[in-house]
Image (spheres, rainbow over the protein chains, first blue to last red):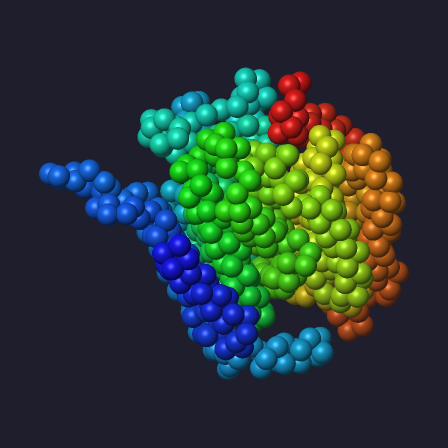
Length: 120
Length: 492
């Protein structure tokens, strides 16, 4: 029972790993990597959800009567696109941050911000 | 044409966003964006009229019937939100061209307007749709364009703020996505109405509880409920003035809408307030949010920061009305949604005018502005009074109904605390007034001129609306009441 749901365990594990990286790491790129892992776990979750035991791809063909549910797969295709857009935007921001702060470490950026704040 | 209004509301700005690139001349693009936003405004007024006279509007996309196809569903609540978003967006956009000249290099103007329209599309979409997955997609459209808009700020701290917002916002949106997935797993439908019908069969399962928790946490991240508000102050403070005015008036409101929609329509009141101690939780978080954020606002030296923290406090008021969980309480929340949008857009636009003239919104730079920019500062004062909740302003109306709701529900301490919270608002508003009116002008600075009329007109339209809706409450109260009663299933 518990092992049979192994894909959901993988989802939970990946989700926790991703979330932990986002919180624990100060490097902006690593944070984005964590975020991507976190999102990917949700993709796997949707894909497992749509799967039907011994179901085939949802196509019209001879001798096929059990289909996997195509809807979650289609939905997650959209979510993947959204995820890519988020990552791309995040990376673009990191590039700009690197250009103007000269660093992609969270603590160094915060020190610099503190300095600007003290000056004004 | 009239039957297609719900989709036009969303699709017109969506189509207009890429068209901006073909015009590609700063002034032309601005006029175009203004036109599109004005059109959305007319659409939403027409929708509101239609809803108030003949009830909920259903629109089937592509002619597919509801549980299979995607459905747009406009009831009183949606129509009210659409009206708030489109009106504020149009008024704010009017000042955009002037403000951008100072805050953004010319070659980025097209980018700005096209992102702005996308963000607008996202918000319209979230509100108009009756399909859960659509909510997620539109949420990401509005958020992604929002991050980019914030990153356009002049200060390099805008980049850092946008990055932090991106991380927090994506976590929030992904939580919502998980919640939607779990709900689909249990019911096999994404249509909100259909979900509401099917959920009672499975509502005592752990999966549904988990879905509920994920959705609530995700939405609370988006609406910047204390203590999940950390992304907000910097994002508002360093974004271009126009973006701040627009987002402060609309983005968190849309998230509050989602919270109401999820709990009242989809899960139903009984389930929502029984599986988690939601009422107590939100009541406490709302109150703590009011006090913590208002106190933080008192100690800030950047005026945009002050009002950003005050936004978090105002979200607290909305959440309290929501947590009272009576038709009056919800009505107070909806009224405050409407009223707070009016106050904050006026205030942030006025700050935009200050930014235009002196290039800074540090509190110390406000010295002497009371004489030099009398109309702008007067707008800030009226907006501030409205935030405090002085009679004859909209702030009074929403707090009045909030107090009535709290007293009706027998929550006296809440009523007292809400009043005390308003006193804190007096403190931070007074600091601005004191420096602007009673301190000599900044030594060595050229005398500052009044803001240009392109700023003053939208600011004062909003300020007058603040006063008008504080006296004549027929429209706002009527719509809020109708929306809250229909959510509670009371037939008027």
